[in-house]
Length: 66
Image (cartoon, rainbow, N blue to C red; front, side, top):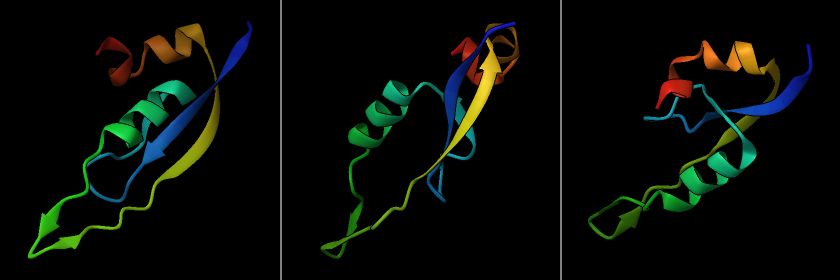
């Protein structure tokens, strides 16, 4: 069973432990708009954790069906 490298993305807010390929993580991060309130930008810190999964394991994750 061959495994592929995926990444678990967390941003400390609304994205929590979502597993996807690196390109998906980058698209998610680049698509996030900084939220402004009273002209202050929210500094968000992202965490990427490498995860080795087979195709079968990945398909069983809820985010694989999106």
